[in-house]
Image (tube, rainbow, N blue to C red; front, top):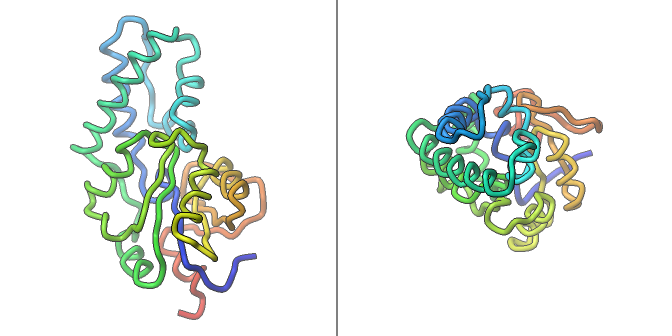
Length: 214
């Protein structure tokens, strides 16, 4: 059951605000091709399957056989290329996102919490000139904190009394529960949630769900 009013909307990024998986796959494949200790090609679906995981956990899943030194080399190269590719190509914003944010930011404070590397959220905001819509951001790469702790940090830092977290995966839901924050599922995203929670089928549905009388 959702509260009848909010003072903060906290968003996941990948699978909730945009889909950057093809650009990331291209960047990581370029990085992989620069080393002789790997011979594989990642698909867009491979990237979607690891969306929302902490950056270190992604490497455990995709490259379990790499030694420490090899993993560090790939991680540094892929991270650098990922940001460079995104700065050049961006990703795909979900339909109606900018128009909906325009309305929401007049009534709520907006935030982003993601399990991404440092600089990733900033790249998203700068590419689409969305900086002015969001009050604050937090990511795994900055503090090495789990998503639940980053959500809690945003809530405490801004003294939010009625926040809600909007995400698209089971991990997002579990993080919101760890932070004692209600959850809304973005069904159009990459994952599913086992619990029964409020849902939106399109990003533009969010306004009606949280402001039914507006």
